[in-house]
Image (cartoon, rainbow, N blue to C red; front, side, top):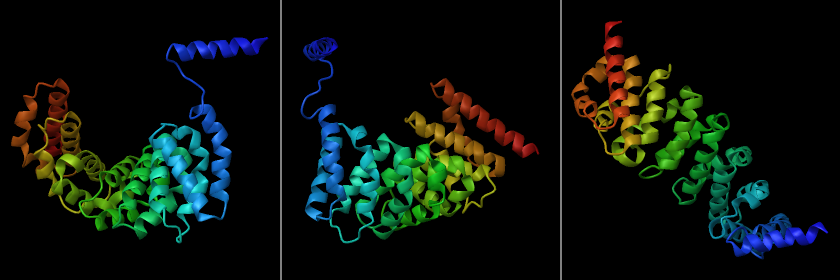
Length: 289
């Protein structure tokens, strides 16, 4: 007697624009998953590719990434097979699944880094770095042990990748000294494209400055100072915060660019003014000690 009520409720939801459970919906995803898993487990490359494309379609066109999280271990296993010619599609799936369920992709971090390192100059590395950035946001401890290798991948990629820098920035929050090898890359990435790379690069450099790690140089202070009155709120706050962190280590370096703070002190945003005042206070206090 309960079943007709449930069906009626679903029919009502459908008419009112709510969720539907039809072919291609969440019910279909549940029914589809066993066959996809079986194809991934098989030994026919064409079937495996078809399964990967089914997952990618479900993620990108149907926005059903969550339904395919159980495929992560099998996708990792395929990524580890060097003879397959659709690694780029596998990487795209893993990047999207990492955004949906980073803790489920975390055990695959070693494979993601290894393949990115092997193909650092190819487009596949971008998706792999994107996956690592998503994992690092939730599990920086897992990615920290690969920080050196990620830095090497970034160094070999022309123009860098914001996703890779994001991964380094997330790790720096957990273990600043772990990203010390990436210091020169962060400095250069900030200089090359401050608008695109500035946010994560500045956050990581600031944490490095506050830690016991060795900084490659303080050249980035000038680049950071040029961003303290940037139109992008997040970017200017990252720049001001970074300079505040540097002031704890070398107040003179920040004092040398103090003139740049004038625009930030008169900025309409009260948070910007407060953060700037705090940074100037750090410079003054550190200079007196």
